[in-house]
Length: 98
Image (cartoon, rainbow, N blue to C red; front, side):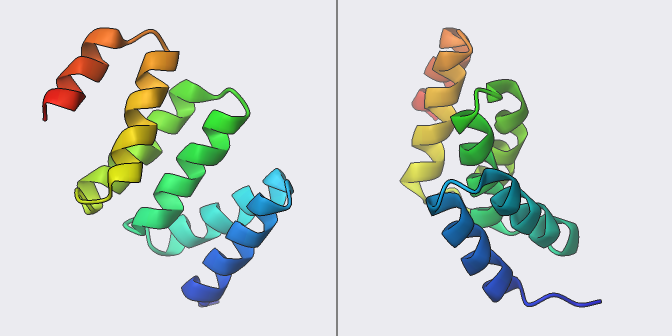
């Protein structure tokens, strides 16, 4: 079954804003199964995982978002912030220097 990615993303963002994190995660993962290169779905999965303290699990989603769209400052800021929360200061400095 083909999904409407735009609608799924809007649903995910709405659920995320309402604090319905499991529902938001369902929408983001649905998008990523269909289109793993969706930068905003990757970023928002990272944000969601970070918000519940799963910083290590968030990193690959931030990396994916950045590799797809290097120009979005918010992707970089959240990635660096998560590295710092994990105590990976040297890695954060390397990313900042990029």
